[in-house]
Length: 157
Image (tube, rainbow, N blue to C red; front, side, top):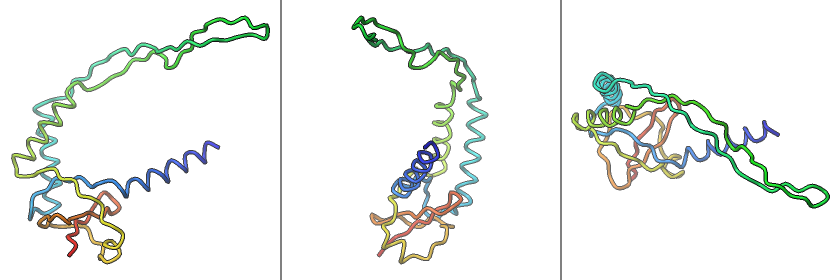
């Protein structure tokens, strides 16, 4: 039964992945390899400017209460644990570091864009090759996801 649920979840996740927009840093005419290099450099610079700050916090347990009755009809309220208490480590600077990296990309002329998935008829009519240079975007621009995290931007006629 557990295997079935895992397989079902994997199938649903794969189906949904094809329906989600592709979000990329975009600058018309930029080579995709240059975008990746600039993104990495901005991430490294942001890490230098806003280093990891690991903090620890305690998350207390959560409880619920329910009635339990015996065969004679005598009832009592019992406390049921929903989640146990736990210690959690987190990076307090993660959000700020992400904002610094996004600002770095914006300073280099990139904007984050979400491209809708290409409809099946466009995918079927397209020779699938990963985008190497970011083309001009139009209202009809869409994206085809390719294995390995690559994508193809398509401007249907």
